[in-house]
Image 1 (cartoon, rainbow, N blue to C red):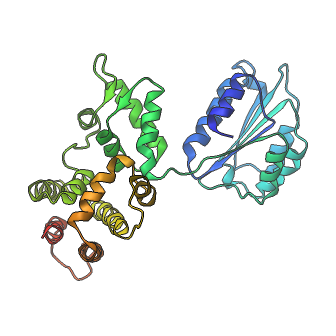
Image 2: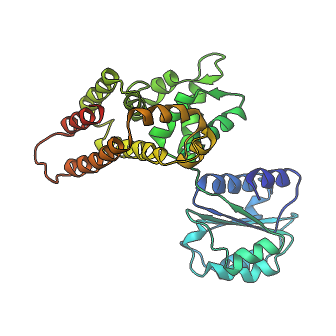
Image 3: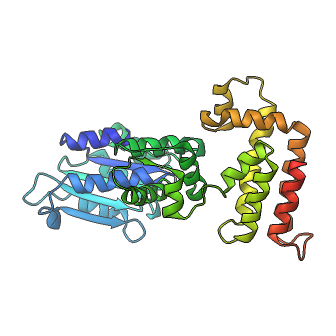
Length: 334
């Protein structure tokens, strides 16, 4: 089931006896868990009819025994097993899942990896009227779309450059992104309904002009002046612009350009799919591929590995990260 399907059922007072919420992306697992806790039993009923276990401290027998109790002066009781991935012998809960009580709502919050589908608990929940939610990690190219959808539900929008800034700064952790978006919403002036790069710079501290995304763009265009301006800023502010993150960002960027050279189907749809980028940026990668042929791109990838090692002290005892970056960017551009 999807998060929205589970929420829809909860709103319609349709409760599953067991919810197995699992996957490497914790955002939806925690969101659905919290929603069930807030919307299945009333605050007055929680004192006697809500029990929360933590996988590290509990055992499966305690969870089963609690689940087999009947609610007190209420139609349902709620049993929540948080951090279930830390529980030993968790698959034994399948004994209860085979014959669950209709008056118990058991939520199993299993994060950071997907519960094995060949295990008995997974099969029992899925086939026995329970609900299984799988929460996969989103690829980086899917995050801007997720951000736009998240904001659209609040009747707000964001420009693409601002989305990419957030992705570069926060990565693909949906929980972190959602928290920062909440802060940005509170900082929107007046009747403003759109989050821009300037708003992000003003409130989060990410520079809209000096960041790895803008450096990639400048290199892709072979804009020497802009690229040098950015790396000069990086050298002056090493704490906010770690060399290792810049190297990682450029390695990812030029690896995609290298892959683009070998694609036989160069339609925009296939490029976006194979490179795992947002279709919005396909033209920028096409432009970069025209400026950097296969041999040059291969050489750049080799240099990136070399300079990464040098920054860690291999073959280099005194050159600063700022100077290494200047050397590297010069080689890339010339």
